[in-house]
Length: 310
Length: 96
Ligand SMILES: [Fe+2]
Ligand SMILES: [Fe+2]
Image (tube, rainbow over all chains, first blue to last red; front, side):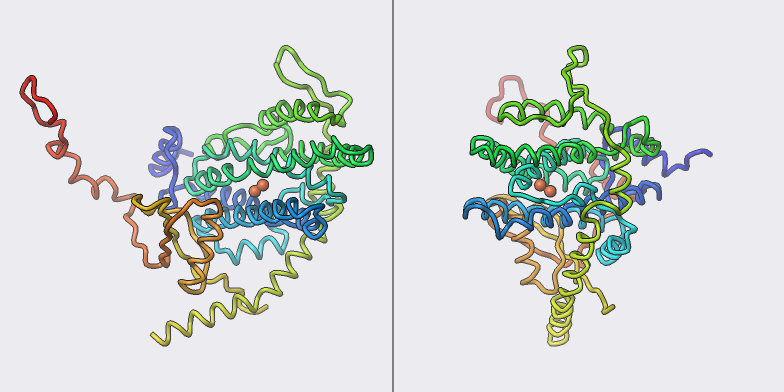
């Protein structure tokens, strides 16, 4: 099949690194790919507030509590930037939430793991936000303008998230043996799921062709994962945390670390709904969405009233 | 389920500090102008990004059509005499 004239001008723009804007012509599959990706990204920001919200009332100090609240509020903001970006592609907020609730839209698998101890708050900020940042930095140059702009904003805010997490881990590693054990335990539980955040190996992701051609994706899953590992391992070593991977070793030739086999069977289990917290996360979102309906209805009623009284 | 309204869409413009232009920052959902302003403040200025915010209902924004861009902006293309570099200044002229 030959590309049509509008497809050519679309691809020309992409090839010249010009951003695609909402009213520009775009192939239908580009639009659908973006809706799927951006809404999944937005849902992840919002669902990701839950494992951290679990520790607000039990934060160990007022300082820690303020920081955690501010961090979680940022994540809510990230969700909103991204929902707005997706809306410019012609999907409504209502539809996106409905797709989340029906299971049609996904969110990042990582949030289906529980936050069991305070050290998990450290591990989430440092590893989960750390992995997200690596991905988001590369998305700042994604081809769709509203998505790229949302990413620039998000990246500016994320570095505090990762630093506050690493600070928690560093503090605990300087503490009593029980604290150090707790930190290592969190490390052991979050390391592998964090590596899985980058998705399947390049050799196993058959759908990435268009994503690269359209410059939605700029770096491959394995490239991003490698970048994350290479910057995180020395950070772990600095504070005395062990990486729970006996096969991890420095590869002089590639100037990067080789890592052990990722347990993709577990990944598939969790993504298909059998993770430790899938049901809880969704039930929570549905509950508060429904309980908040009266606020939205009151807002709509008020808006109607002031328009009629004009 | 009840009508799941997500309220109206508003565009947000932020002036980073007095003297600068208001620049489009993104959008919010809100039922009225006060809610739109408060949401915009909470979403787009959590780190002192702004000293002033404008919110405009998205339905009142009229945008040019990218398909017509060539034609639409054409009148500016052939008027290079609008640029100072068009003019030939005598050798040695200063501060002009
Ligand atoms: Fe975020
Ligand atoms: Fe974050």
